[in-house]
Length: 148
Image 1 (cartoon, rainbow, N blue to C red):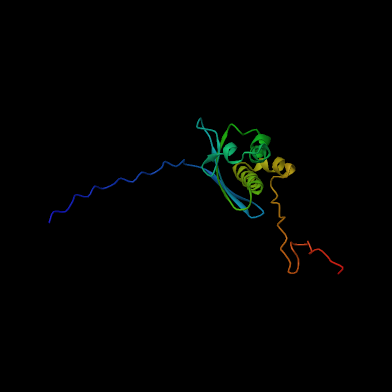
Image 2: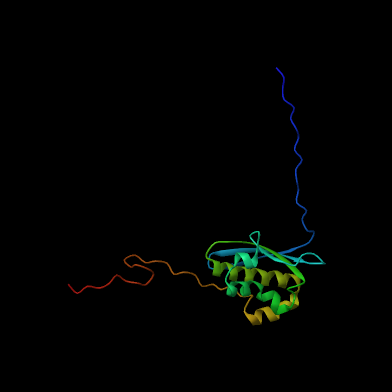
């Protein structure tokens, strides 16, 4: 019995940038893991879940939320950002990315903290959805009352 020759497959390993700063951001049940790469002549982009942020967040308000910390500090053309975000809705995800990006920028340079805090980007918005109570249709909405 002749055995067929097995061909060894070579593993393809992606080249990772040497240095990055990572931070987590949150809003409602959305969680964002932000990696900030100081760019030296490379591509200057914001990538969210493998897509450009303008493609992932189609509404201009969400796009502005994501890029706001970089524009505020004037480092939009000096940084490259990759984000993995999950949970909740698109609006909460955009704010989670903004929060995580602000935290990463503070780790990059401590002097950024004052202006980011003044803009309100550093504080995590702790508001969550109120739970539904029994006997009610929603958290506070009672069934319609009938006299007879």
